[in-house]
Amino acid sequence: MCVIFSSAVLNLHVLKSQIDTMIEERKDFADELAAKIELAKSELKHKSDNWEELSHKVENSKTSWLVAGISSPLNSASPLPVRPPCYTAISSDGSQIFPDRHQALPCYLLNISSVTLTYGENGEAFLGSDPTLYYSDEDRFATWGGKKVPADAEIISLKRTLMEFERILTLAKENEARENVIALCDGTLILWRLEAAPPDFRDKAMEPFIRVMDRLRDLRIPILGYISFPGSTDVINALRVGLCPEKISLCNQCPYTDLPELPCSPIEGLTDRFLFSTILKPGEASPVFKSSSKILDTYGDHHIHFFYINIGEEIARIEIPEWVALDSELLACVHTLIFDQAKKGKGYPVSIAEAHEQAVVKGKDRDFFFDLVREVLVKSDVKVSVSRKGLSKRVPGV
Amino acid sequence: MKHIGEVVESSTKGFIARSPRVGESPAFGTFVRTDTEYPVYGLVYEIITGSKEPGRKPTTYDMSIAELRREQPQIFELLKTEFHVLTLAYRDTDSTRFTLSPIPPPIHSFVYECSDDEKIELSTEDFFLRSIVSSSNVPVDDLIVSSLYNAQVVRKDDAHYMVRMGKSLSRFFRDDYERLSSILRRVL
Picture (cartoon, chains in turn purple, yellow):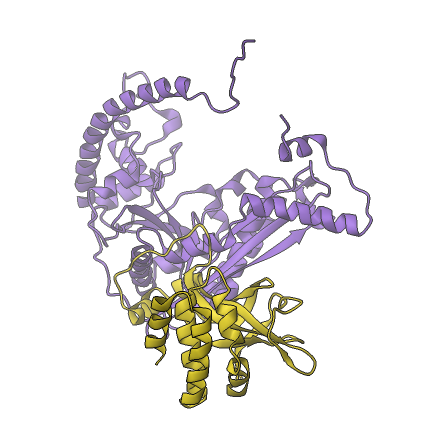
């Protein structure tokens, strides 16, 4: 008898040749990138001398990309301020078990972590997380453009994000008597996904977020969003506006579309991270730029600004609300403490890393959760059925 | 009196307890008891400090403990200290029985160090030595040395007691003079 073995796993032989081709093509890209970085660097220096002119042009231009608002020379690097001996870092993260229609009951779970790390003579740590189960109609449905829609992964993720901000506020209030308190979030503070949402949904989501920001401002506790390995191009895009020969760049009326290469494209494809990695020494921060995301029109006093920092291992993007950006004392505090947090975490802020570790729901926790739901249902004598697909995934036969 | 541990794993022959704070376990060879309805008595024979999460391993920081408490306070929340206890006896309604407890201590029972009176009662006869000698997976010789030392401390160096226990040990190890001699040299 002839047995042909066919494996259900990934076919690595086929994949390997594709990987080889990809790497080969990337080699050429590396040389191209080096030339682009040199050009961007000289543009940065050139435009720094008359940054007001570029700032004005950026403000008046209408481009199809996000462009950094400029309010100081572009290539200035702020040295690392002295770290206060005592400070407190607070952070929160969340994870979820999404509703699974193959399971017995429609419900989902959000697990939100709390991390408070106090440094100095009275060094102490508080780490924890709280799970909450959502099953009522109010939680399972959302109003989206006047219609009642089931809460999908995106809506649940947004609810989770808002709960993380609420948790940060709770931690901030608990620690308001301490000196040098800083709140750290993983990822952006710009809720750009809401741009596509209808006004009723967006307003309902923005309201608690703005309330948290208002309270943090009143407490004078700076909040920051930490983006590791950022892919953003806001500053590069500002330089592209600078490269545009037009007095005011209006991309939808571009007169150069017939040329083989647009005047703004020689540095296209670069990210801000590449550029600032050639300028900033470890500990140094870039100037603060203003984000031009559309959703920020709804942020009021909390319009998001950002800067780049060399944390030693990489260039990170730090996002802060306007009241932090304009307060030199809070800005210096954010600069030095985010560097210290990243140093303590060996390249990634320790408070954010621990908030993630506390919140994460692993695959086996997920299975255990659904088993527990079923067990309680059976004990309560409630008749339920599980989909055959769900069962087949759990117990694959041979 | 503050408890020194909380039972996190329980079996007939012994149990594992977690210390309330990292690095603060009772010493090896300490006589301990649970706070259950029928207290279980035992000896600490293993102390382990490590990560709470199975997937995370402690890393090096090149800092003193005092510096770590100031600059990396979270690590003390991520570590745990657990101690393993060998069951020697249990307390029935009216007396101490020198045998395994019919029911192991419930999970989450608190663990206390034995009082001097309890230590004396547990070590008056050689039952505790016999329990150690007949156990597998415990460092038998060192546990004999440490528990006898602790028994002698509460007796304020009772020479007569040591002679009696020495005789018991010579019976247990009559076929292994080298081992007996090694234990006795360390006890005396």
